[in-house]
Length: 420
Image (cartoon, rainbow, N blue to C red; front, side, top):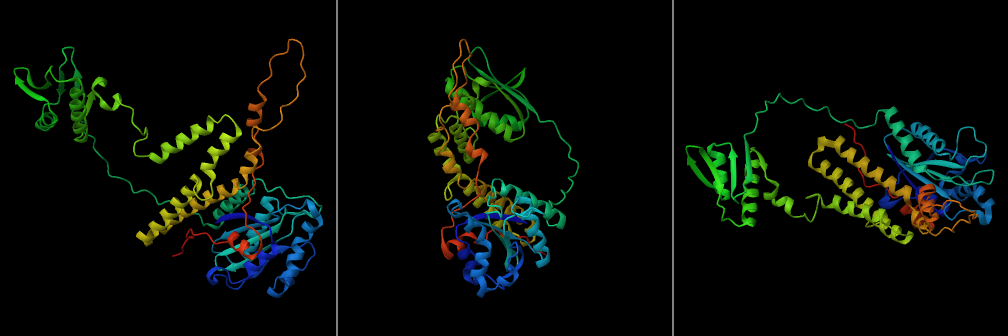
């Protein structure tokens, strides 16, 4: 069970969408399964013809705030799993309690409802104004939701389990023959060690000359071989010998891999190397603008790193399901991972506006005293206590009206767990 948290600015448009046919007519039998209207008869108001009254019942605390009301005052949590209405009602109550939307026994809690409009999906809708006129602090809501969902899934036995590994047969390790390739003071290069026919063939193929005398079989490069050619031949010979499972001790002065700096230090893992470069860019940011530009590469909603990772995990799960119908548990695990990344994106929505204030805090006024030690740089202190780290908001721009609400609750494309 994974929760997707979003924010909306129009409760009426949101409920009109949830109680409507939905995209491609996917909504079926919309119905209220739980909620708390603080005296308002939400069960009687949760009919399609009574939606304006239900909207008013939920928005009443927000309307009392007047100009102090937040722009996006509607909290939406979409959940997917195979549960009955009574089970969903219990889950919804646990989630609003875990996030602080409606703690147990709190007379001033926010008003909320839980609406089911698909066989495997439920939406919990709440308004963030409390009865006492204060606002619910939505910071860390996404984290608390996922933690509670994981706990509930464990209690219900819905967590996918990794298959037990098949024990391997006992392997017998045979020591690999060893060959040492060294550069001699005379300028020659010698290869000593194993003297079987295979190693001799590989060394000759690389360019070594074979010598057979009363010392036995040996392989050398002439002293007249140019230095660049010596390193190239020795490195090529070492590569072939290692591929044939020989142990090779190659003189560092003959190793071409150590002589040149590779363009990508991580070899084929170019994406990882690019993220290392981005991490270095973040750490070396000299001001808030540089930091914000670097972080944008991580959080951009269409082209950022997190979105690309989410898509890759989602595509992996779908491909596994297409290739092997019996591997549905593995496909679901990748789907769960994709939705965890989506939750991380929700946790950081709106952080760009907070990052704009990083590094722009006014310098604190300090009293100058004789012989007092030099105070630390206030800019570094401001960066260390970034408002973005202390006040991340889990909100996404759903816009206004029913079309906006439609985007807010679009079902996840990650395939849910399948039953057998």
